[in-house]
Length: 307
Ligand code: SF4
Ligand code: SF4
Ligand SMILES: [Zn+2]
Image 1: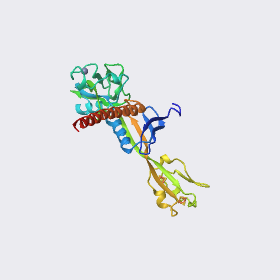
Image 2 (image 1 turned 90 degrees about the horizontal axis):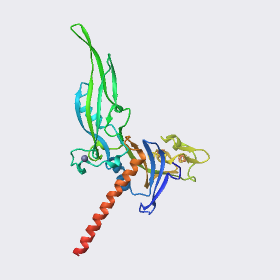
Image 3 (image 1 turned 60 degrees about the vertical axis):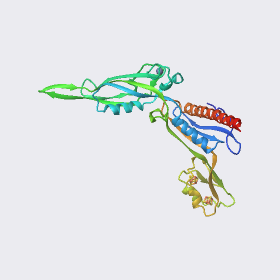
Image 4 (image 1 turned 135 degrees about the vertical axis):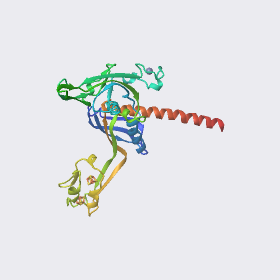
């Protein structure tokens, strides 16, 4: 992605100042994205955060049929662990919620995917960890996030009437994944981290500042530097603690924030790339606003007709 791609104005009126909404990506990997959202109301920033946590549908294991479990984990704990394994589906948009499916919730290829797991501890004394990679999917386009430990299976030596035998532990189960959203249950929450803070603004009055350096020493983020002038290395790192203001006798530094700009920090659980998660949350919000606009228009129409 080029620097140019990283800045995208939507053209929408975002704040009371009439500034256009603007996005600047600061850091981007498959799992994490850090970006600045400018020109929006605090309520919109919060709505976007909530949409990432609660409105973006994903697949998660919702039902487990356990045929055998001699592992140290109770069935319920095993099922809970399975439910929290992120599932990555290339064909996620082909799935529908079970309650909206034509099968009427009975279960079909459009509303569920099944996984099987059959694992045993080693043949000799020892142990092995069963990982999410061992779940076999009924749909090759839906895969569990790899390398997530599920359960440790242990083989022990036992003696019965002086005869040595190896007792092995095993797990055999079928897990069924369904589409859902985070507001229904946390297992359908696609973001593990989703937070924001206002964009800090640090103003220095050079006429008042005598470069004593007290604020430089006090700043816990070490973003202030006094050379020939007092300089801020990176405003974005400021925690808004205002310790620099408190320590300055000359009232030469002021820390505030831009109430219409927000630094977001988002981490995906692996079911989506982090940036795709943000886009899907924005789309989910747009869908809600469109529905709201239709309802408001209908109410306005009826009120007009009654008048
Ligand atoms: S404490 Fe005040 S006067 Fe001293 S360097 Fe910082 S801003 Fe300048
Ligand atoms: S508000 Fe806190 S973090 Fe920000 S510049 Fe001042 S001392 Fe540093
Ligand atoms: Zn169905």
